[in-house]
Length: 324
Ligand SMILES: [Zn+2]
Ligand SMILES: [Zn+2]
Image 1 (cartoon, rainbow, N blue to C red):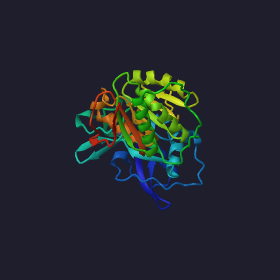
Image 2 (cartoon, rainbow, N blue to C red):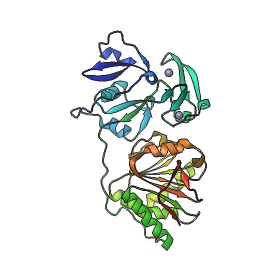
Image 3 (cartoon, rainbow, N blue to C red):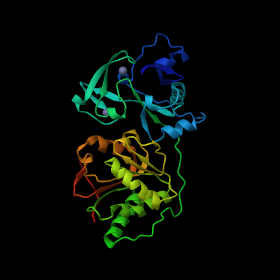
Image 4 (cartoon, rainbow, N blue to C red):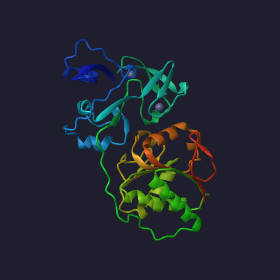
């Protein structure tokens, strides 16, 4: 998409090329979004009647414009009123490129094509191509308006199992991490029951009306966790995100996602649990670490589960470690 940048009602606005007719622009110059020096978002117009369908679809996400099943007119009207932000998918820094969707900076994973939309050679990211083409003229779109608040729930956990002494200590640490919005690393050997160790902490999350994402390295882990958690939290809205899943619904209180699908999530979860943090491909792919961190709110509690000891994650030492 090419945009023109112009001054309107004391704001600097972007206008997508197909909507130029709405404004009386004097000899507008349209350029690819990646070439614009700044991307201001107009201030929020609190009197604007925003679309709750768009809010529901877009909140907590960062999507390519092409992924939105709404008209450009509607999306742009929300941008003008401060409810939607446009961001560059590919940023050029001197001679190197960076993909803002997946964090890729490996230059050989960028390629160019002759692009009809921006009418020039357009760079795109090959690293995250399975999620759709993030190119220099593709805006990433996010929701900037109010977001839906979840209702706190009473007694959401339906489980009559019990925890061993070691599991109980770990479970208490999970509750503490959730309440204090801190980081926790749990080392537990396979078969030690680390899923059960999460139950009380998840219960606390839902009692507070917050949202949690469990990120797993592979689809089979997502499919294994989904029925187990559905059974013990029967009243919780729960969704599973993986390549080919029917639902892309992430407004649920509990989302279980492959790390790839997390690339579409943005500043949304109050608690992020990263399962099998040492497992392939998570440990060796910075894209998935990037996606997980961005999907969580800045203040989120982050709980790492691992079967093998690791001391460093994302280049920083975790404050709290717990060995089960
Ligand atoms: Zn990318
Ligand atoms: Zn292009």
